[in-house]
Length: 308
Image (tube, rainbow, N blue to C red; front, side, top):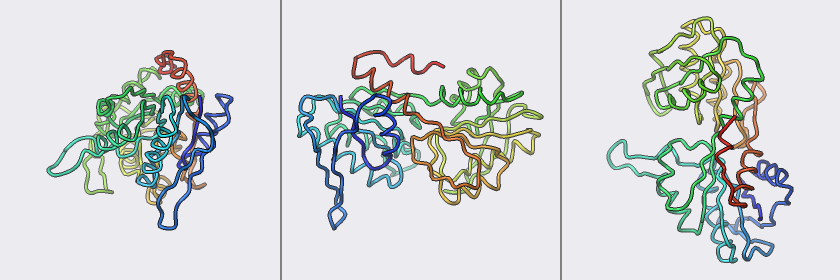
């Protein structure tokens, strides 16, 4: 088994390798003067089971192309099996045709990975479950919820209620409410523009309770902050937000500072881009991914990783 890292999230890759008690594989990744990506695997991987850790986060096109070239280099170096470990699967929001003449980019990314020579995919909290069906290779889809729930339980929150900040996250919010053994509420929103969201209806009782909003990703924090304002208006005592993938923009950070949210809980699937002006808890998925890699390598079940 060999673990390699792209340049998108080397800190997480090092933690995974440390959990597995393995050194990171040696690979040279650089740019030509015209910005073309060059990759050279600097050790023998013939007949090896190799894993490439690379999030398709900002800049997504650079990181995706880098991953594809690494896969191709390893295939041509006669690796036995190549598993792409994508803590964050980019372009996942473009998973269907919801208006005329638009692409299904999540499927295009799947096609590119398979065409490059990827034999297996390991990822965390896909934006849409059906993306697994875009692949004709095995996909191991892990959830960050056990890690986040463990953190929330350690805070001993009094009278909690899990809130879905929009109707798309209801299923995930229900799963969290079951794990935390508490109530569920749903905020409905309408999108005013690419960056503007308005939450206008709340289903459920949050008065005098600690609201925990859960979602899989955020960038501008429009949905989270709009829902948080609605919760505060309905008498929520305190508001927490738990998000697996936080690709925060400067606008998103500013919205968080101005919002009623007490703390943002995120994972390290994407390198943290949040400044010091807001309380953030960054939880690591390194052990989760490391254990999954070990079980895949040894042909064991990964089902128990879904349990608390």
